[in-house]
Image (cartoon, rainbow, N blue to C red; front, side, top):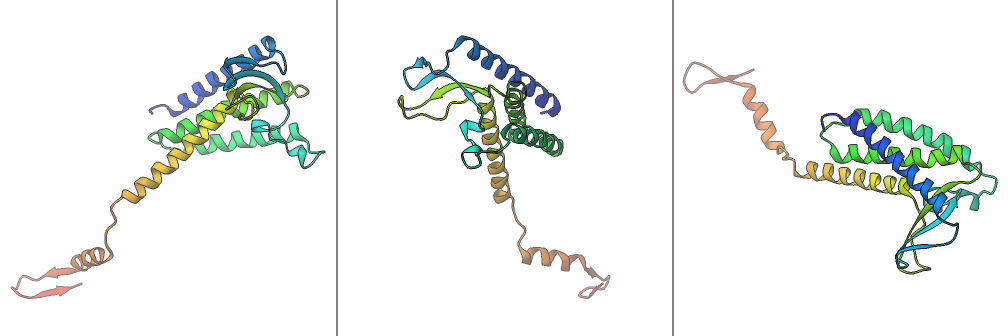
Length: 197
């Protein structure tokens, strides 16, 4: 990956646009609560407005007065700043990590956009997948997909690094000691004699 910043910018721009476009189409063409079947009950488009967090998790169930939108605004801004700073330190050869961070960026910004500009409505979720009508994964959107795959890429990157560390040859302790002794031994010109320094 020669141009890692190009990757971040392109993935963020394209990902954000697709998230915005699909949410707009869902909000204008789907009816709230009315499923549009794609593959039976296994895959449907079902429009809901989510004022909670990722996959519908809502801190207000525990703390009713929790300032949700303000919290996510500050949290996302801080997270994006940390992500960019960390991204700078990633080597161009760490492809999985670069892709992981690049995918998280449009996911974070996509849902943040809804929370800032459609605070009363909430985030548009419309993809429903499951085993049956009543047994399904929380309804989500493209931004949630980006974050999920981004985290998966980061985990793969960590796994690869751990495998590299395990495969890296380690010099035995006795071998390293012998090497030091050999460096400190200087052979004299006289046969059979040596001196150490």
